[in-house]
Image (cartoon, rainbow, N blue to C red; front, side, top):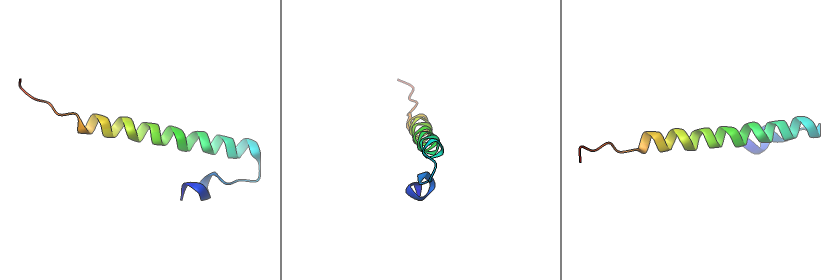
Length: 42
């Protein structure tokens, strides 16, 4: 799916799409990390 999204004839638009995908992956990683943080009473 991501490969279809980033493919574009215009090089500038292609690079912008790649950056948006990278940012989305980074945001997902941070969100997952927060969600997986275990709170203990130790």
